[in-house]
Image: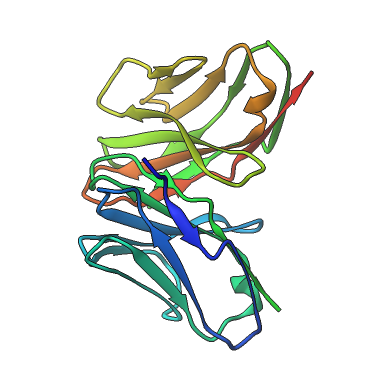
Length: 112
Length: 115
């Protein structure tokens, strides 16, 4: 069974631009979560989706948004990029709310 | 809010020896899950082991085992017979059982294996 896939793997953007990251969960998994990983702040929870509904949201500004589609694929969007948004963005999927999460390889976003 | 603390930023061990990574957490909940994740240089986060708080028995997965002390809010990971492939960042994580998938991570411990 294929693992969690994330596209693109690497991305370079300029301040003020917006970006969309994509996550395809493991087949059959309906829950998708997103995390931001930086050297300074570590791993921080962004949001969580289950069956197309956002179930939980972390403490990030409104510039960070996401959605989940009927096939469980998820996207996250960051608008008006800032230098501090440079990070590894990790997506994780799970069968449902009670099961452990499996992570994708991440998208490395660099904002210049 | 729950917090997770890993007090050892770096650890090293000789190949084939045993090493223990420490983790403490703070929560007011009585039921929750605890995890250890491994992140090798490839950056892919891999689940190592999982512990349910209601279970008194410590979880084990091959060479990996935990020492779960609920009263002390301590959750350490023991790696036996360390192998070069065990070199990675190790993250301790907490998750509530209250219908949310949100993981709260510690800052991580970088483990080096010396041949």
